[in-house]
Image 1 (cartoon, rainbow, N blue to C red):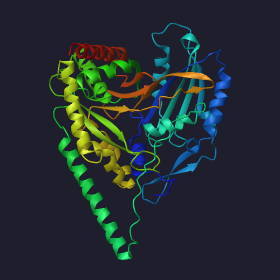
Image 2: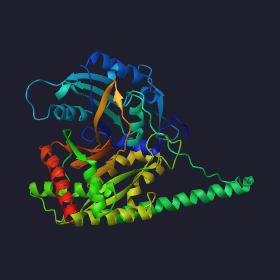
Image 3: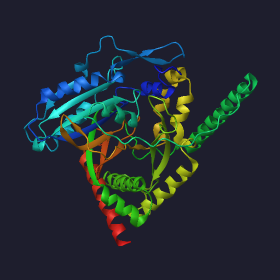
Image 4: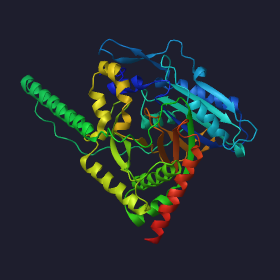
Length: 442
C-alpha cells in the first residue's frame, strides 16, 4: 500500500463518521506555568509547531484505486490558524467550566474536507493554569499515534528510545520465482484462514438478545468527565490481590458502571457489560502509519457485588485474552476490518456500526505516556485526560492515561443518556476506594 494511502481500517473510521457519531478522539491537557500566561504567545507557538508536522497539513482525497479507497494529499489552502482557537473561561460560577467548554467543543464534528484536527488553547483555569485541547480524527491516527503527534507540539521531549532487538536472523537462500510464488500463496491462505477465524469468533460473540442495558438513542450532545486516580493505590491493589495495573483499572471501572447502572434504575445482575479494549500493534508492524490496532473483548463483571471478586473475574478474562493473543478472537475486529476492501466499507460499514452494541457495550482504552517531565512554552504538564469516540447507540466511552504518579480517566458520554456525568465520575472514585479497602483487608 502506498505511504500516502489510507488503510482499509482508516477508511472504515471515515465511513463511521456521522453527526451523532463523530469519529474523533481527543485529550484535555493542563499546564502549570511559572509566570502569567500570555495567550497570544502560546497560540503562536502552537501554530508554528503544528504547521511543521506534515500529517497535520494533509486532507483526505477519494481515489479510484483501490476502488473506494482514499489518499492523503497536502491541503492547497492550508491555514494553520483555522484549526486553532483561543478561549478564556468565564469568571461566572460554574461547577466545572473547563469540562463544560470541552464537552461542547468535542461534540462538534471535524470537517472531513479539511485536515482532520482541531486544537483549543484555554486560559482562565484556577491558579493561573491553562489547558490545551486536542482533537484528531481516528482516520488520521490511533491513540498512540496521537501521542507521537503531540510530542511535536510540546517543548523538546527526551523520550527514552525503545531498545532495538539484538536478534539477527540468518539470511536464507534466495528463493526461485516458483518458490516465491508458493510462499506468497501460502501467506495469503494463512491470512484468509485467520480472517475467517476472526469473523467466526465475531459471529459467535454477538449478543442479539437481550438488548444492552446501556444502549441508548444516538445524540450529538456530549458530556466529559475527568477523574484522577493515584497510581500508588492501583499498585497497592495489584500487589495485594494480583493481576496487572490494567486489570485493576478495568475492575474499578466495572464497579463504577455497576453503581451508575443501579442509580439509574437498571439491573446490574442480569449479565456482565462487555468492553472492547484496543491493543496497539505498532511494535509488531513497524513502519505502518494511521491505525495499527487490534483488540480484546473483556467482560466487566458488573453483576458481582464484591470488589475483589470483580478484579479476579477481570484478571481471568484478560489472562485468556492474552493467552490467545491479539490477532485472533472477536476483539481482533480491527484486523478483520483492515482486510476488508475499502469499497465494501463505503457500502456497509455505517450500517454495521449501528450494530456495535451486539458485540460490546463500551470501549476502554489505555493511552500510555512516557514518565519524563513534559512542558509547553515552559509551563509544566500537569494532567492528561484522553477521550475515545462513542460507537453508535453506546452511552459512554472510557480512556485512561498514566503520567508521573497519576492515572487520568477521561469519560465521554452521550449527553442525552448521561446528563449528569458527575455521578459516573464519583462512582469511579468510590469504586477505587472500595477495591483499595478490600486489598487492605486481604
